[in-house]
Amino acid sequence: MEFGPRALGSRSILGDPRSSQMQSLMNQKIKYRESFRPFAPAVLAEAASECFDLKHPNPYMLFTAPVQNQRRLELSDEQRRLKGMKLPHVPRSDLPAITHVLS
Image (spheres, rainbow, N blue to C red):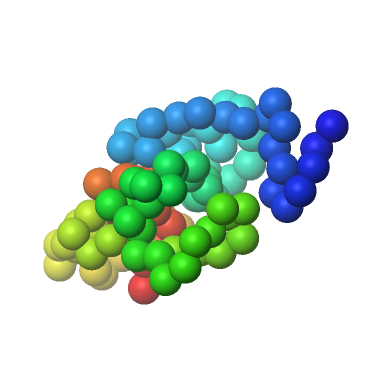
């Protein structure tokens, strides 16, 4: 039985957010959806500020939060010129499996 907002029950999928291949692998082989879709990470409340710039607690994954600036990767000039579906494949942080395209 599922209960509460965003309840996952026994359907949670665990993957390493540091892997540049994890997002595509899970989307293509497990979820059968477009490879660019991000995943919502589960992080201990005590460690959340190490990864994310949170303004308030987010225990039910109802809000999005930017990745901490120190975790973001600088784009090269060539990467900045990319357009369309090539953008999601450029690593934006040291947590590429959970970092969506940043503006």
